[in-house]
Image 1: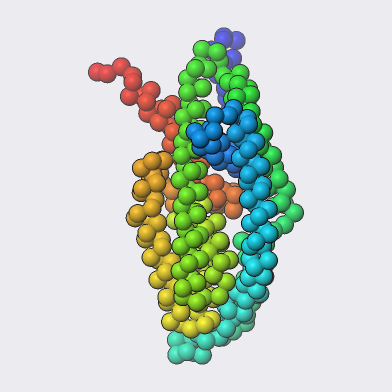
Image 2: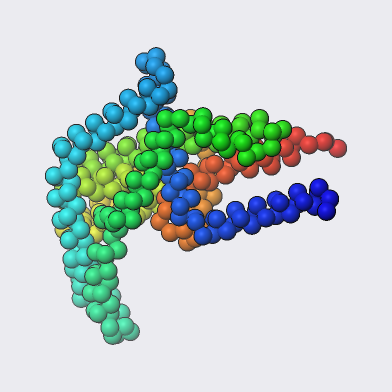
Length: 338
């Protein structure tokens, strides 16, 4: 068997192994990638600290970790009772809101006409209202979620404290004559993820503050909790704000249809400000991911891998764009010209 044939068989077997791993261990790979994003987030903060205080990367990372733990403890101590109370009340209120709103619709002229065509509409409505509570995974946690978060935290911590060790280990898997190119590729992807993470964190913070303030001014109940939900779901561009607006509109509609309209206008206005002002400004300094590609990647990853795929679709797309640019487009353009 010739060396070229052996090489082809080796790469074919390697590709088959990679495909099997992706198919059967996709959840684990996504959790590890989330850990990498957390490490990138810690790296962004530690680099910012090093611009102010001349310390080593490890010391800066340790200071960042201790500071984050301290801020988390203080935040829980100050906000946890209120947020927990609001979240529990909201968790109980949403099913009742859905049923009450659906009952109003049923007794309207349109609802009466629809009931003639769907005789069991009332049963469907009440069953759907009962589904709202267990389906509201945004507000609840489970053992699996906690385990995943623990893995993400530890993967992120170890990567942030000693990234060079893991980069060196990855480069050992690459042929020696291509390690320089592979190293440049890894650093390009890391820089892209760093810029994307920084930009997304800023947008999430701005969205949470503006949403909470707007709902408070509109005198909508659970303003703080709904604002935090909006900020967290803003991690998922385009689709996240739409999902975050649903519970707020339901709560507003329970007060009055006019209040629901005001809430919907608030979310539309904030989404417009985010999409046309904040996001373009941030992307000028970070990374530009086309909106159509973002939505397509989110839908595809969501269908294939569920919630984790939806959450991580955009940073994976950003990394993939860098990969394609560096490996295919740049080398193709650098080829022999006619």
